[in-house]
Length: 89
Image (cartoon, rainbow, N blue to C red; front, side, top):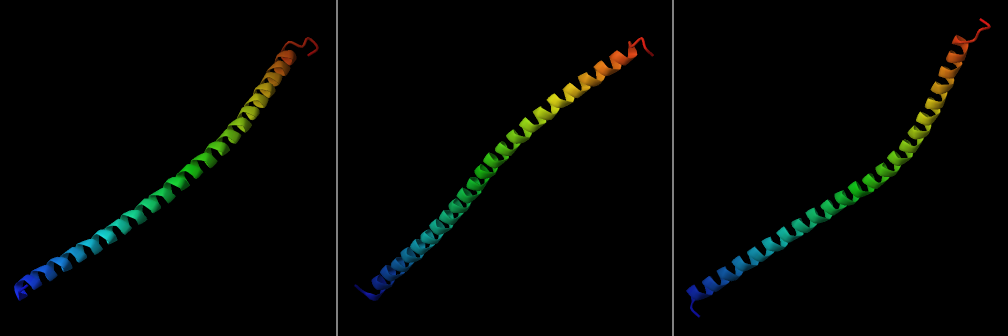
C-alpha cells in the first residue's frame, strides 16, 4: 500500500473505533436510564401496594365508626321521641 491508502485505512479505522466507543457510551447511558426507570417503577409499585393496604384498613375503621354513629343517632332520636311523648312531664 502507498502512503495515501495507509492514511485512508488508518482514518477509517480510527473513525470506526470512535463510532464504536460512542455506541458503547450511548448503550451504557441507555442501560443506566433503564435501570433508574425500573427503580422508579418498583418504588411506585411498592408505594401503591402499601397505600392500598393502608386505605383498606382506614376504610374498615371508617365503616365501624359510621355504624357506631348511626347507632348513637338512633338512640338519641328514640330518647328524644320518648321524652317528647312522655306523659309524666
